[in-house]
Length: 173
Image (cartoon, rainbow, N blue to C red; front, side):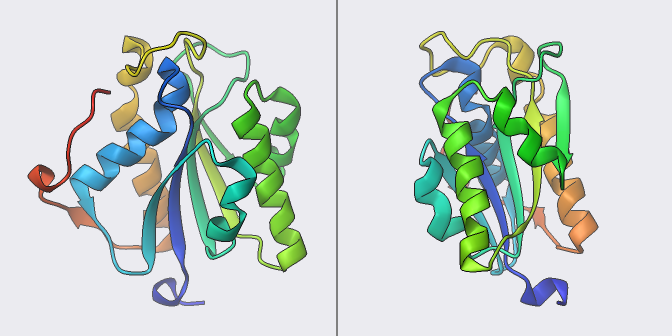
């Protein structure tokens, strides 16, 4: 398919009530605040909907997911997971929404519509403390995650441009 006929989704998942667990959602908020995309690109705050995202993600041909990913690495380490790397992550997940999200992705096979998926992730420092703020380590990587998402859009041939930042509310990140 031509890039303009493919449906592209940028999806942030996580719980913003638990510090770095909300990384994916906070990155999505910044992307929405900073950039404009063609009509065939959707930017979605998936929160902790997990399996309930099945109907949404099955609409995408290409899916870029942003999330906190526990991989026993150093806090702040960035990951790009694609292809066979993604199913292996089920065993390493530490929160229910992550397992549910991967199950939703797997269930797309039943619909015969599995999007080409890339996960942009960060090794979180703290996903247990109840706080709407990211830790400084993780907050310092928001721009790096955005750059990784934009690199995926470049790889897909999807155009984007800087938007009007005053149009989208800024949340504490």
